[in-house]
Image (cartoon, rainbow, N blue to C red):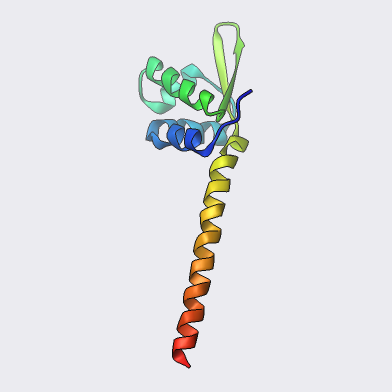
Length: 108
């Protein structure tokens, strides 16, 4: 299984329909393609394409049951994005601390 980097996750979630599908699966749990099609308000082929992108980014998993495909969210796949954001959070905290120190020195 190939690891997923933050770029894959960001690209997959860049589309508002894919984000909405991922959020729906996260909130409501496992759903069929048909249920997601009703929710998304786009065609079934469009939903299937969005699910393929989410699946490549490891953001969803699927299983077949008869003629239906069921999808569920994999929130742990957000880890590369969270790690990337944490890196920049630390960067900005450090910068603000430096600014605060500079302003304190200027007040003296």
